[in-house]
Length: 535
Image 1 (cartoon, rainbow, N blue to C red):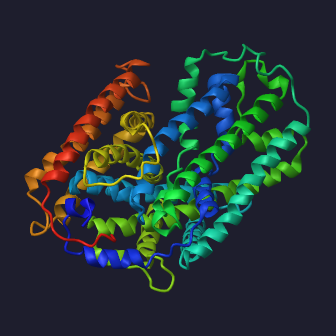
Image 2: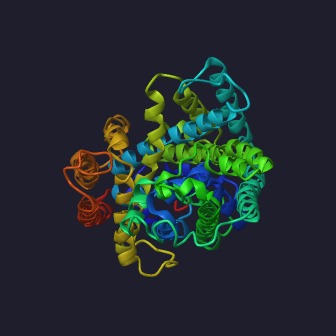
Image 3: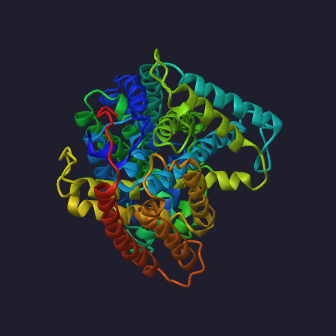
């Protein structure tokens, strides 16, 4: 019996092991790398270079490197978990194992809410497609025609995920090749059309707005979120060949490829913006479609057409992977008993959780409905997946402290990487801004109702013990909400920069050690019963 199952008693563990065994182990290194890369690179690459340059000037290059380092720290924690305990939808299983059912339910609920992120990608496709097919949008809302097209696209993406994971991987590989090729062609074409020397030192110097602006670009310019999504291969670890070898390499390769692409695009933007547009410095540069309009200015009409086409395909590729990820999350949440166990069923022939796919299709369609301000709420739900990063940092520290748990040992220095990763993940959530967090964090706390509704006293430990073990997460979410209101990221500004981010870091560090102590106590005191080690 594994310590994981012992810490989470469950009379349905045998059935869960059977369903897990039906998953096909068909994904190799390149398939997993393509999944990670495709999940990272949506349509945001068309805008990120301009926003970074407007905020930090040429020093934005340092911002991209910083974003890669920060995401790499978080990735190392998740790599160790994925290599140690590969499992379908593992990112929503590890918090349950490490911290108990309350934490597992709240984190799982936040992941379920993040299905809205896939709906937002589909909405983005509709916005770009409106360039070719008018009448898809009226103002900021989908028209009946647009809703019909969006629902049809959602059904198509679900259908493409319906068959074996090998087919999903092959199609995603093709999409990923296109998503790499278009940015590379863009960089080459822009430089070939002519470039302006001295751009790294002219117009105010390398850091015209100070090096502190690099942090502003990192936090508020969307840079972090442009390299977010690297965790996707981990949720397919239960379908990977030799996960201890392929998972670490695929996650880091996906981050590295995305970072190289963003650096190339940033350089191309810095060196090819016409001199006449820089009269007011980098802050004065403003395009509605940066690379598309830049291509038109440089008489590269063919490139502009290609970029508009990619503006539809890139979010389409991300949505395609998102549908697949959502199905693994829902499958794992059913194993957690956050959702009914019937959703855990895996098809014998294809190895795909069909019921989970259908549920998520229904959720996506509901999120697409044009209910006024509903769209603004849906767009923030993708940010809630960031809580997985913080919960994973706690999980890896708890597992390391448990003598009954074997770790892969792939990542050295976890004793300091784990708390640093928790702090970085907390900053990622905080940098989302008060406008988003004032809605998102209370919605996550609403998962308490699901925890109580799905709880079965016959199988679970005492309620008081579960509340005690998970209290750190309740305080963590409440504290982040308060700090977000006090801070400078669309908050009241009562806590000025950079002291707001520093306060978040100190707060997060204290919560991390509290969470680890609670997790260790949970794993040593939870009721134990036999369960198959296969799950």
